[in-house]
Image (cartoon, rainbow, N blue to C red; front, side, top):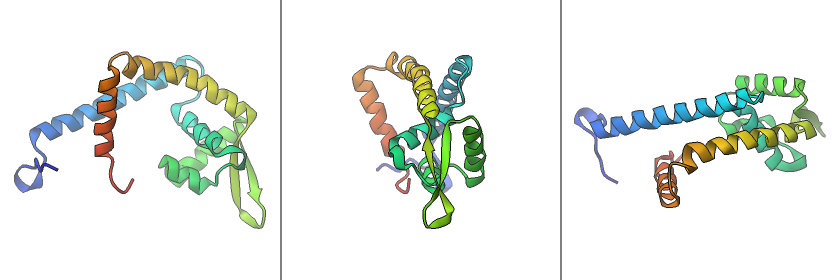
Length: 154
């Protein structure tokens, strides 16, 4: 791997430009997705992420700690989010047999419906923001480059 650091271990100008562009594009794309979900009268994208993880876990569900780890959310943020989603009937909590403090979280039928409705909007945004602008080779290259940037501990 090439070391492009400048004086004192600081990044080279091109590395800084790439970082800034990555941050800008990511923020702009997420804002577009959030706007499209809002325009469709749907919940924020993080709700989709929670429902996606829970549906993927099946009927067994996930413990809050498992969900927190897979989503990289702080515990207090996740607790508030789950409270709101439970209030809206999208998730259910149940006690873990033999462990009075532990709970499992599952997506309700309504949660699965909302997730599908959200995916219809979210998927269209992915197609518009990425699929319509990059060909198959470019998307494969971009995916590979982004994987190279992924921290080894994450």
